Length: 199
Ligand code: GSH
Image (cartoon, rainbow, N blue to C red; front, top):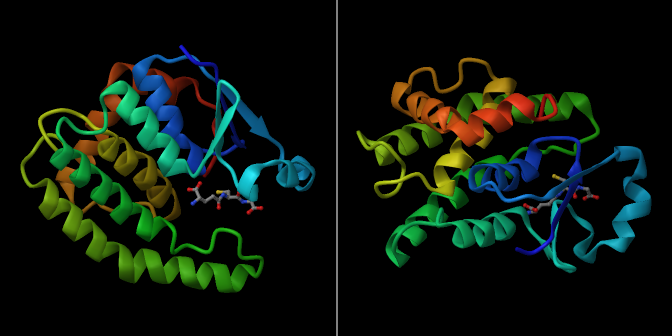
């Protein structure tokens, strides 16, 4: 088993999907959380200057979704066939397109609040409607077993529901999917033990 070292801030953020994959598959890893104040010193030492990164036996991977996809393939959570894998990737990218619209680093709080409100009020409903109809009456988003697309929905919607409590309340099937993910014993244990952060 390779030695895995994950580096990110002390947030769920873009690292949490990776932590879910480690938790679910029971793979040991170093969950290295850095302080914001130390970041300017660390940034120039990191290829591409962004986190999360995952060191795999000394090889540095960047891009959260590339890392997550690699782990999902290693652990059987990427989808059972190439077609399922493409569907999983498409759902993850669809959710990520939305998450990436938020100006997370905006310094002007008024501007930030205005854009966040607009996205949560006017853009989120279309995404939720589409995800709900994609899920239909199925247990999992793609195929007959859980994939990292289900994890990604849970991770991202937890943050979205922190930002706008009640978001997705009109979509009980999407909320039930969230509960199914969080009830997976290894995920439930991780949620219980993880550092409590707002984002
Ligand atoms: N698409 C990249 C991913 O998913 O990994 C985005 C990485 C990214 O923007 N990371 C942020 C970061 O490194 C934290 S969420 N911010 C510090 C900086 O840009 O200096």
